[in-house]
Length: 316
Ligand code: SF4
Image (tube, rainbow, N blue to C red; front, side, top):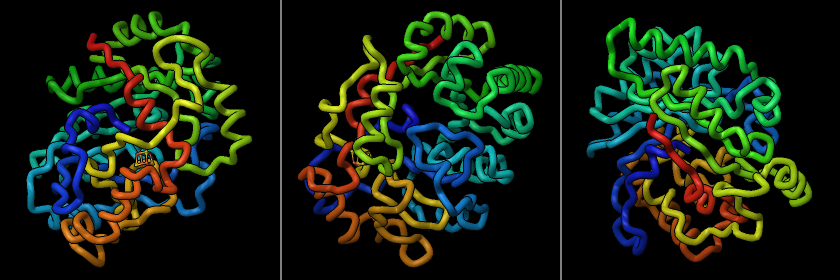
């Protein structure tokens, strides 16, 4: 989840007339070339991408102002070859556009991305060398990702553009928690604009057994420091994600939140109903009520509410 998307929050409370969402998250791709151990995406059978036609349909169904559109949920967005055109279309709404990427294809599309006008790109680097990167980003290439950041910064300079803002993200684990200072120096050296230290999520997509969760927690949660929490700290109360963010899958399903990659809590489909009707409909209101009452099945074991308070941004 992008930290930019968590800046604006509606007030929690009654679901009588839910405020229409000003933040939109789109499943640009349902596919990924990496195999991060806590993530459900590598196990998915469906590998579709969000199409230009679907985006057009979505945006024409939204008649109120949107603050930000995020293209970084579920799979790797740069695998969608239409991404630069999707971003350009999204910018016509006046909303800020964000991409979260694993960086593996960044060099290849850096020029097009700068040309799309995208406002913000966050690249998951997760280490200061190949060894620490691939402890979690299984299948990743440190050299390729770093070259991607360099190319992106250079293309932005060549085109004399002020965008995109470039952020380097480190998911903090026990393997890299002592490398934070060096990571900041690396980001500064590469010309990035900010560093984002993200607390580790034990189970992205709610697909792990409790034994697997215990193993992942033991393998990756930091041992000390400001980004550490334990499994017993995890709870659902106070999560505003379902009230703040419209989350749309590549098949047009609107789901409760960005933890619902496999569609456990589908609120409706934009092919069948308008976004406003889905957002204010009975299914959505019940699903949000279940979150508030801590009876929402999807929330069991979700580390998002605790982890987001442990994230840290450093502006360089
Ligand atoms: S699963 Fe529940 S706690 Fe987790 S992000 Fe979604 S609504 Fe919030």
